Amino acid sequence: MKKNIDLSRRRFMQRTGMGLLAATAVPAWLNAMEMGKASSLLGNQPNPNFKPDVEIDLVAQRDVVSILPGKGTAVFCYRAHLVKGPKETVMEIPGSYLGPIFRLYKGQQVRINFHNKLPEPSITHWHGLHVSPETDGHPMYAIAEGGVRVYEFEVLNRAGLNIYHPHPHGATATQVYYGLAGGLIVNDQDEARLELPSGEYEIPVVIQDRRFDSQNQLLYGASMHDRTIGFYGDRILVNGQVDVSMDLASTAYRLRMINGSNARIYKLAWSDGSPLTVIGVDGGLLEVPETKPYVMMAPGERLDVWVDFTGRSKGSEVALKSLAFKGVLPKMAENRMHGGGGHGMGMMGGGLPVGSEFNILKIRIVREVNEAPRLPSHLSSYTQHSVSDVANPDHPIPIGISEGPNAMLLNGRPYAFNDVQSNERIPVNTLQLLEIFHAHGGHGDGGVNGQEMEGQSKGMSAMGGGMNMMGGNMAMMFSMAHPIHIHGQQFQVISRSSASTDPEGYASVKEGLISSGLKDTVLVMPGERVKVIKPFQDFKGLFMYHCHNLEHEDMGMMREFEIY
Ligand SMILES: [Cu+2]
Image 1 (cartoon, protein in one colour):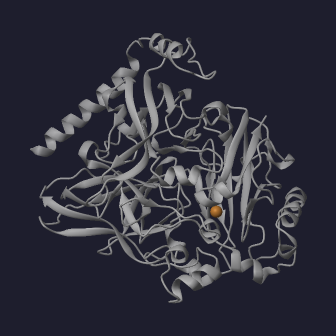
Image 2 (tube, helix red, strand yellow):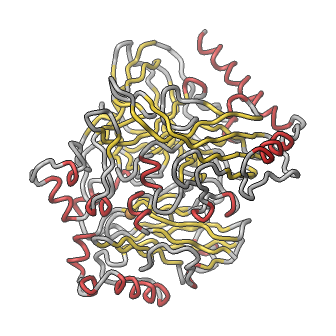
Image 3 (cartoon, protein in one colour):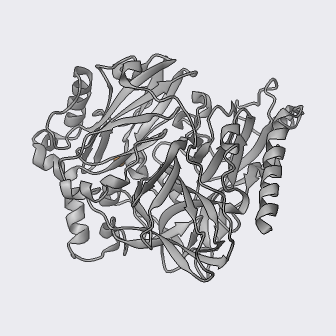
């Protein structure tokens, strides 16, 4: 009975959401023009010819929120106000430092007025959205305190879960760490037809790790070691809260998961040994559901997980865990973490070593329901490309990872604005093959073509003399896993070579790497080579690609493609 009410409410919400799309848009530009007169738009005037279906004021500001018992925690956070559009566009997560979840529909015209009220420059990137370079949150558009940037775009993406977060060069890691991040859901008609769990049965699960001092304040250290392996917290937060326990019903749920951590990689599994059912990844629904014993999730990645608690009795509990694994850290750091050499805060990731086992989220069944929607056997259709479709089947665009004590590089070069190399220039409206690999990571075979070798040798000398002497074994000591994120349209992972530098570590994560679906962030294990096919359509200009270990990104493991 309850279920029927929920289902009809769900259909109603879907109808109203979609219905507003068709309704005549009332221009909101008058309102925006008023703002322009009143404040400094810094050349970012709204376009009077742009007719938004949705308009949001988004503010990055300081706040104090309650995370631990006692004293409040000072944070940076996104707060939003819906100026125009369906009510469900902005869904607050009560009490959280996380920004509200935005819910947009494919085809909507969206205007977001971003106000920076932080005491430092910032800019917002829509991780996963296919938008123009001016709208993508490139670091060159960072605005100072008091500044405004107006984003106007059409939602071109298919249904999926995306992220909004800061992208100022050199300060992304700290701004995200202190709280700036939010989820951005896109819905479309193909997805709506599946009638997946929605409303209270669709739950955001944003996973992060943080460290607190004795005054409940966020601790962030950026020692050389922290920068090299990334910064790890010793408390796990879900949706901005610690020790989260959710009271749910014995029915099916859709968990919309984001790894919003700076550096931590999770090996997600259910505590009772049930397999995980994955229905979607970064770029939306898979073709068919996949069941996995566990799933690896790196910073910047998203997962759409189906879970059905039917048959569980009231009072029963299950936890979402991260299981033990190895092989993602440089050998030197991993030995130190697991070697029992102490638990110093700076060196060990606090009391929660990377790859250790811990609970993320407890779920308690508090209501028995005897019905659940059925998991669809077919979820979505999208164009699946093969190498014969790409413009460059024999010359993949290289993304060569090189890491050293204080030098995190791509294709041998640190990030520099407008430093585009010949192999980073890509003609618009083409489909390209890209190969991501460890340039010094074990095979000793370096690059894939001459262009990349040229870049690599420059980078090697930039790192200082010692690195030039590195043979395969020395390089392996620094080799670690990197989640590589490419801005713009999602890509297909078409092949992964099995990593040979650390077979034991690789075996502990291998079954949890998902290669199907559309991705924008892919975890590349030490020694691994990953080939992807990515479209570069519609927009010319500069688009970033970088490591989504945010400490690495800020250290310069970031480059840009110029689409021409
Ligand atoms: Cu990295």
